[in-house]
Image 1 (cartoon, rainbow, N blue to C red):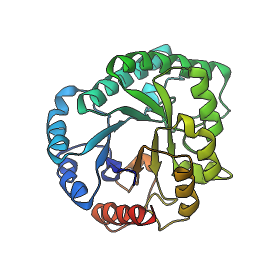
Image 2 (cartoon, rainbow, N blue to C red):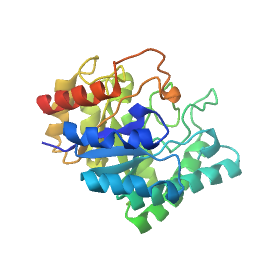
Image 3 (cartoon, one colour):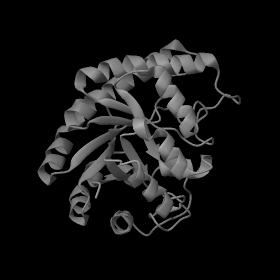
Length: 275
C-alpha cells in the first residue's frame, strides 16, 4: 500500500493555528503525511508547524502556487524576478519542514491569460525561471514537481504531454512532474494512458475528484486510474486533494461536503479500500 497524505488547501489558503490543530485528526484517521501550501515564505512562521508534524510522525510535503505578481512568464522582468524570489523562498520553507518536493503549477501564474496560446517567448521564460529556482533547490536537495492545470486555469501547459515536453526541455535533475487527476479528468482522452506516458518523470501524484469533493463521489474512473498507477509500479505517495468555498481561487460556490473532517475521513477510507 502506497502511503497516503492529505493536502491542507481543503481548509483554505491561510495556514493558521486552526489548520494546525487539525493535523492530529488527520493522523488519527490514518494519513501518514500532509501537503502544506506555502504562501508565507517567512521561516519564522513555520517552527510550530515543524514541531507538530514531527510530533505526530507525519511526512510533510510542500506545494506552491504563483499568482499574477509571481508570474514566471510575465512580459515584465520585475514580475518574473518576484516569482523566482518567491519560489526560492518556498524551497527554503520546504527544506526546513523536511519535504522532499516543492510541487505545484508555478511554471506560470494561476488564472492569468492573454487570450492566446503560449508563445515561444513565454515558454522560454518559464524554462529559464524554473532552471534558476531548480539550481537553488538542488542545494537543498528539493525536487520541483511541476503540475499542469486545466485550460480554464492555465494556458502554458494544460495536458500531460505538454508538461512532459516542458520538463524535458528544462532538462534539470531537480525538476520532475506531479500528476493531478482532477485536471486529467478534464483534459485527457484517457487519464490512465496519460499516467503511463509520463510515469518515469512522475514521483508525486494527487488524487482529486471531479467535483473537488469527497473521493469516490464524482465521475473519476477510479478503478482505471488506480490500476494504471499500480501498473507503472508507482512507489510514491498518494495525496488527497480537495477544495471548498474556503479557497476562492478554486471557484467553488456551493457546499460539496458537510465538513472538512467528513471529507478527510471518507476520502481516506475510499482510497484505502480501493487500493
